[in-house]
Length: 207
Image (cartoon, rainbow, N blue to C red):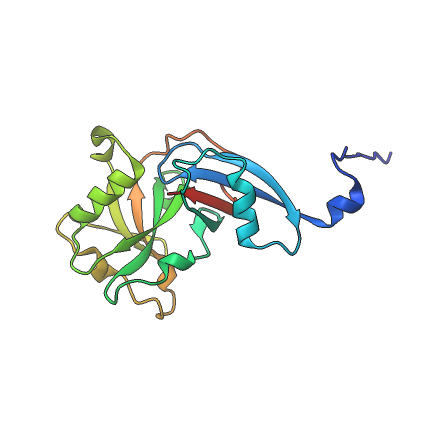
């Protein structure tokens, strides 16, 4: 028996066919729960159009707050914000991921949560980087003290000491596979589970 399922549209079909539907996850630059917004815009719309539409739907930290649009797929950022491409000669823009080891799969590294970019400076120790990360994510001291930090390349963690120079671990951007390296934050995943988290395409940060 053939069963037909019909979807009830909230706008006329011809109009819908001319629009692009995006699911945008809005969050502040902390670990706070994000809010999903569905945005429909003409297919020829730009990133600026998406941001302007979203501004009318969200509560900003202040009236002149800037939004950044990033693309995230399987917990990894695939598009670099334009404003973060202009770094000082010895700065590095690195990926930072949350991860844990799956004890049921031979300690395989599993990423979770929201990734982010971090600028690291020449000669900066892990201790200095940790201070900035804790402030950015607003993690309480007691919880943060349990976190481990590792340099990961091709999924293999190399745990770092507080005195290690973080930038010395990362290759230049023009080296093949450089973006497969990242700074990993190992800790338990205490965030509420969200079905979209594994393959969310669009993510907006409010600075």
